[in-house]
Length: 211
Image (cartoon, rainbow, N blue to C red):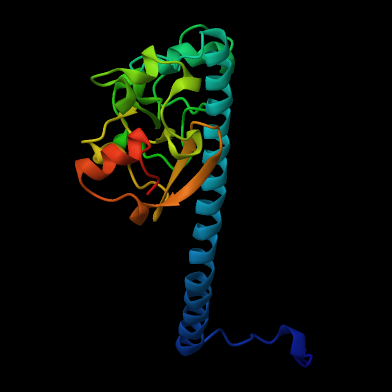
């Protein structure tokens, strides 16, 4: 005599197509809500880390100026000159795309120049070295500007920046640039506060006015 089939052994019906589509729609909705917030959090963390990198570069520059009679490092070789204050080496020579303090965490490798193996994602204010070479030949204390208004370093893809080449400053942080000023304070500055045009950038880099 056949035993009655247990209810636990009965096959349960699978999910219907409609139920599967509903689950997929719910997952898609949750992903659409979560991913932008996650991306914003990552961007915010990278921006903070980038500011920390600039702060370290600023401290190294202060140490350099104390050792070299209150002058800034040469514009074309500043990573080499600052390396002894940041790394255990006298030259900034690392494999390509090595992520050191000179690398912005939001930087895109393909946007970086070939200088220093594409390992430098910050730019020094080279305007002071052009023409009169004021930064190099004049002591820091005698500059005719307010240190808190003069850019020292900022996001950059070529190692240095000039008043006529604002395209050397990439928008890796979306609507803001990370900047460290001559007095060593770092901050994020909205990109719309950097006006277009060489005259405006000349004022900005020379420090005649802030924004």
